[in-house]
Length: 400
Ligand code: HSE
Image (cartoon, rainbow, N blue to C red; front, side):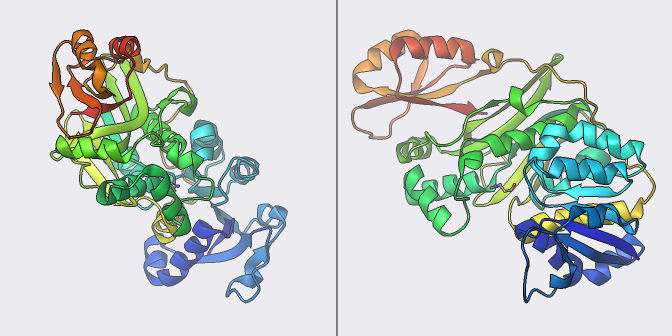
């Protein structure tokens, strides 16, 4: 029997216990040996919970127990998760986590420590919730040179944008409703400002190039400035607005960014709505492949953590290869990236805007007092210079 401990009995931690219990027969068969949850670490007590007798408050009980071979870290945040993870790995206990903050901040170091101690640090649940995306990048697409990843990596913002589109509502209104229903966190900053998606694309980008893409270097813009009027224009163009996280490698340069984009009906991410996530991966032999599923939520995320537990159980004492070393990648600034832009200016600036941008495609949407258009393809730098000169209401990048 393989003894497992769960650190943090919150939404994901309790989901892990539920998945292991409900799918016991399947999971034990696939692990090659029965799994048993020996401890659950939490500061709180859980009177009446079927697992209350497994709850401990002192992490030393888990760390000092040589029977515990696999730990699920579902605490979130850097502290004390970083110290606990390091300590577990240094004593040869594998760690499976959903903690994208920790993976993005210390991934290569924790993978190295794991491998030095003949155990594993696995993080399938850190990106895309229940969608298998880490494993495809690590094991399935090993014959590929992956040169682009584009994804919808945040369930909360995708839910908000989908609702804004369907109901013609404004951002603040939908956010409030999402919070009331428990979809969005009470402090939604990490989601709506794009920080969560930024950490997730940092993890995927690092796996794409085998080196370390620092999340701090990724240009990140959230969805707080997107309005109901933007969706009126989007409809007029046959497009929708999605928060995309992207990384691309071209001519030896590496770009990564998170921002709202206008995408058309023919884009593979157009139909990804509500809390669903999806990731498009481009490889030089395979071409495009896409991974789709529930990007957030208790059981989908817990299922991904448990899939890592099964992998660890199958590889006790052996290292599962993961190419992510600690050499930092120098990202190319987005000023050089080329694309077209959708722009709104006040009606009295029509002539000025046409003079500045020259070839423009006018967007008719009957919004009073405004002139709206799509620019030619140009660099971000060139766009910013022109936009600054005339003074615009807003702009949204267009993803072709
Ligand atoms: N807050 C995250 C989201 C949870 O909305 O996608 C899953 O990482």
